[in-house]
Length: 301
Image (cartoon, rainbow, N blue to C red):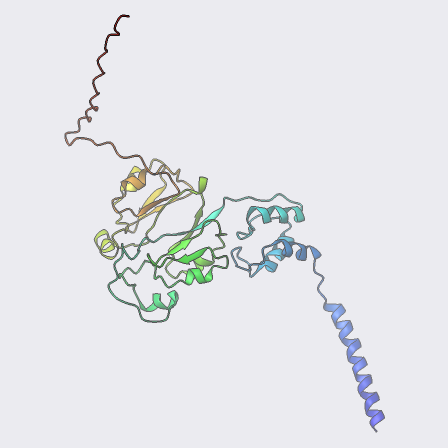
């Protein structure tokens, strides 16, 4: 009886093994080995900045498409793009480098705290139940969701200002911090020539008086910057100015015109001081020249 049971079970096992083998052969999926090669080239951060589920999904998209049109790995940058292009046998599409920018200047000095938050240290939760310490419903909550989301150590919270600080050299423009911020104060913008950028560090859409009540450095929507921009790069909508980085030529005329200092210019040399103009509109008098020293005759020898 025992021998019969062993033989029957063994026969059943062999039959199932044969069936599974043929099923596996029938439904097996052949994967292009190029996917593994490209996956090894990609940074492996799985940050999602490319819009895919991870680096392997991005590698599959590259191989399936056969080129790099519309596909870009922000964490890898130009170097990774060239390697992937070499594997695909195509030309790399090099885009302008981007960087995360914090569009809020509601620091502890500019936006004075009117209350204390004593709840879950999570920006998404606080945003659903809380306006903010200064009362600005558009400003940074300062609980660090953005810095926690960054896998490259490019974001940190400044204890003095209570605002996030971006390390330009470490930022890969993956966009994880942008997704993590419930108030949308972090934006990806072009790094710019010599790492120089001009942007409005405010998201407050309230009218001028209300915006200034929450933060002394808020944009009041006065429109001076829009009128002074010679390139049409600035638009004021819903009481808030925005600078289009594709049109901006970094002339900084708007920086000088902004009455609240809401427009920031990063990595620029200081602006020259303005020339004083008299109230009557007449040109300022030229500074008086010092009298030339009298010539002393050389005594004859």
